[in-house]
Amino acid sequence: MTPAAHSSASSVGDVADAPPPDALTANDRLALLRFMVLMRTVEERGLALYKQGKVPGSFYDGRGQEAISVGATFALSSTDRVCSPLIRDLGAHLVRGTDLPEIFRHYLGRANALNRGREGNVHFGDRRRGIVAMVSMLPDMMVVAAGLAMAFKMRGERRVALSFFGDGASSRGDFHEAMNWAGVQRLPVVFMLENNQLAYSTPTDRQFALSPVHRAESYGIAASTIDGNDPEAVFEATRIARERALAGDGPTLLEALTMRMHGHGAHDDMKYVPEERLDEWRAKDPIERYERRLQAAGLDVSDIRAAARRDVDDAIAQALNTAMPDHETAAERVFADEPSLLEDGGDAPWSGFW
Image 1 (cartoon, rainbow, N blue to C red):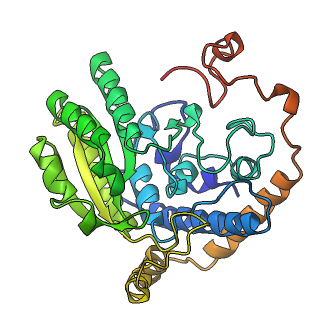
Image 2 (image 1 turned 90 degrees about the vertical axis):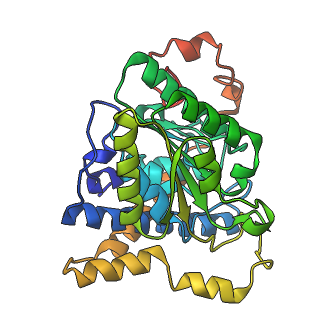
């Protein structure tokens, strides 16, 4: 079964407006768990492929942070825009229905539709599914999200932009520029701050003296801190923030507290984090905790992990059987002013307008 088959209306692709649920049903709650388990399974296998030398560059994963991207994206309409899933936000791609074999073709540098093998790792999006590709200067995407939200407001559209970023990003000027403009213009944007307590190796107490929530409030933006390891808490906070935005009440900043359980990337052994701190957060693992919660509610979760393994095994097999990109076309579709890029009608993930 493909990831899209697990989804609710909130994960329908960029075809027609499919609103998010007002309240989670039993099937929605199972879908949240499926997406989190699938994200972790994809990244576990991706990391193994990296260690086997099959994934070029480095590899990044979001172990321990699965509830944030899954819960937040689940609360969006299909016409809202995700801007953009970062290096620990694969769950957003899965909720939106990005094809699993396509993800592994991307990781492995094979010919693919997402970027034609031109950029590995995590730099990919898909305009057909309302996902704006990330850039490495992470707060820049807050500015892009504010721009999208400004366009929605000017065109009178009932749409919201959601921007993911980390605690380290809140220490850059782009954060303040985006927050100030969004606050002044009362833009329909949700800023999701994933506070995993480390900007690479710098802890939050050495990054800022005043919490990001208080800084957001100083720009006239509603802000709150939520449990980033609880997908239902993330969903509900995002749902409320989205409704506020659509009602004309402006932007919201949500600080989702979590912990990065692996290094910044596969190259980072994270020896700078005390083991007792990791032990504390292992007890708060979002998947294990939510699994127990659903079991206690009488829901059957027995096949979710096995199904994720089957789906991922099949996706990897398909990706490994895909050819490498044609080197003779390496310079094509690089610059946005190429006629071929602008004339394809916007059907490709990398083309068209928003």
